[in-house]
Image (cartoon, rainbow, N blue to C red; front, top):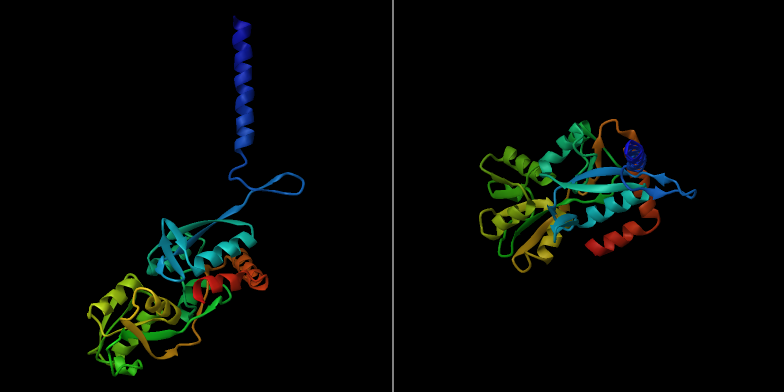
Length: 264
């Protein structure tokens, strides 16, 4: 009886050792040519999924130009991807604190943001545009917006432009919303006279929700605005990987495919 108990105990110890060895592999990884396992590093990516066609949530999945691009970059560099949806103004602080590894959300590279985070090489040329209701007249430039009611999304270059307009003319009323969709809704119902926003996003809105009701006026301004991927200051390894991945997906034609899918 004692021998049987000792044999059972030895078997249980052996089984435990095997489970421990197998369990030490962590996340599932890729196999090298010699058959060994190479564990992928998870890249936690922050976005603000209310900015079509760059990022949005559909059927429980994050889609859009930025989402396809960052997945392509990550795959090219051997990373797994986890995407977190945050408020736009929370993205830079989340990168700084390390709660996310990087942020991609049509973030314009500017000097103030560059003090807080490091940016990848630019991946998209943007620019701003003014949108008004179809029947609106007399607005084509930011000068025309002085003394008017203007709207934009929080934390964006559009919001900064609205504030500058108000600085020049304090009678200007500025309304800032959590999402650009809310700003456009306010325009549609007559709560503001204009929305200042990124040109490609405004163009997409007019093709979809704002069709026959909203138009773009004037010329694209701040045309040198470019989007970049934000990483924590000093994270040179990740920044190098992102830049290399971006370069390679541009070279192999994948960037063009993504562009045509969302922006053509």
